[in-house]
Image (cartoon, rainbow, N blue to C red):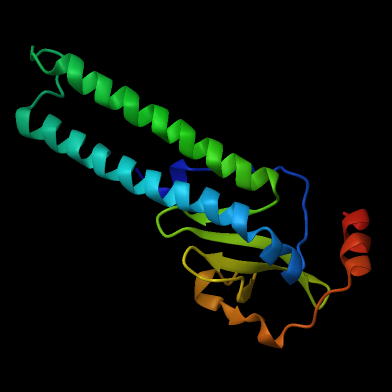
Length: 164
């Protein structure tokens, strides 16, 4: 399983967060992201074990009859059910206006405005609060401290929303 399999919908109406708003939502977001990271790791491990079993026993072929075929199919069904649960968690974040970037480490972005341009407030599971931001194209490597950010007035955020 890879991170691309957990896909939030990108066609949600765009919402911009102030730093204070992003931090206010962290208790709920932290719980959702914690569930995502735990389940993502579990699914990844189970999927790898299943692949190893199939390859080791050459049970991937339908021509090979095995007493374990039914059990392996159930394992695949369980994994798929958990992938759907992961997608549900990602959808919850998307409905809040938050983008899941990496389900393995619990990295998310809150859309924001910095000096009138779109950017992201960036948070990772384990961090006590939203403490970083980055340009849209910079990604996690371009994270900068929020200490130097000027708070965006709520009216400016609202005005840009009405223009979109």
